[in-house]
Length: 495
Image 1: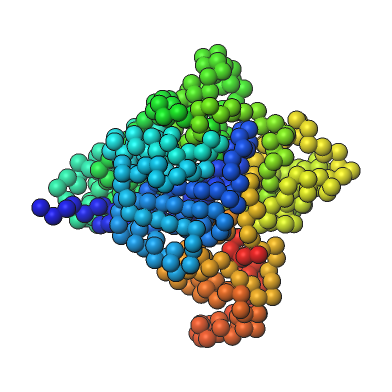
Image 2: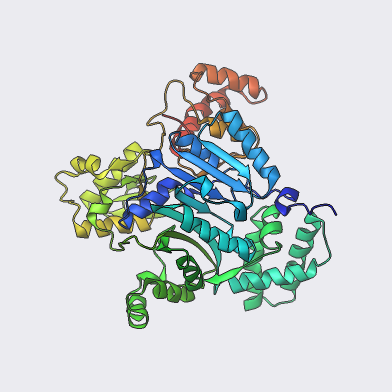
């Protein structure tokens, strides 16, 4: 009998960079919790289920002295990734087709292990193999990133999934499966009155699915396996392989129940100092349906108080832009997503203005502190707590590595070769900060492809005229500096 085709060969799963899996972020979280992880400049990274390498390859490009290894069971995505690696000439990246259950110590030890979108979507032997491999291959101060579908919130998505699967039973064609499954939800929606709780639940999931590619829906909602687990169960599983909870990949947002005084009191009363029990109780309050958990070796000592000495081991950055505040002497700092923070504290203003001036680069506290002279802002425990509040609100970012981004737009600007490669075949590109930038406008995409470091402004304008003859030359000329400024702030231009 012919072998059954891997579903990820049959329908390509959309592949993007995941910022919180980057060793820079993993190292920063490890340092914040008192570990001494390998420097991003000289580390080994393993990605399990790497697809075509859209997450791994940009990391390898930006950190050429580190080693990046990935594998996936699906052969076609791996072949595409190998082609990209060869075209970029990367000697520090390797991806291969392989079964997790056949992988062992021959790969060596890794400082950072990534398993994104894997644990909940594979059979039980593979879940066992994943955590066993992490326990076997993780270096003493290494960090593993594992994402999974969590309970109790996962029950809601499971209900939607089971209704869709019932409707498409017997349907094999991928496009038809997605169309019929989504169509059935629309039908169910219309059977419920406005404001009905059941209708609101279906509406929420429909909106989520319709904002994603049908290929996501085919694999996520209509895939064969959908494993749900409580956080405490996942950690019991990890503990069997010598691993412990470090933290979630992202610190809780400002509206999370964990910051409420009454919730903290309830947690202390019910769970005491047991961080795992606390997290599980919080997930009940959050109705959490998904987690991105960081693991480290069980024999490491993990700190959760974020002392000043650990913050001094990190770098700070901020994409916020300042404008005059509403209060006298205050300044407002706005993020690209529209969120805003206002402060009239001279030290906070000086700190954020220093970071604004160098974005997309980062600064150490030693580099920042001379700029705070005379503001009364000394980084003691109270100020460290204030800084962490700015981190939670994402006004300030923590880094463990200086990304190779340009400090300014040069006379002959050069975008990363990795991003230019992506721009040739897709409508998005990965920045040197490991974020994803949409390139829906063909003019913007065409401009990015020209930034190979050989052209000055005049040569760029001539090339754009030749590429887009239907656009008035003056419009192209007017767009060059704003376009370069956009690419610079996005972290697409190389130092």
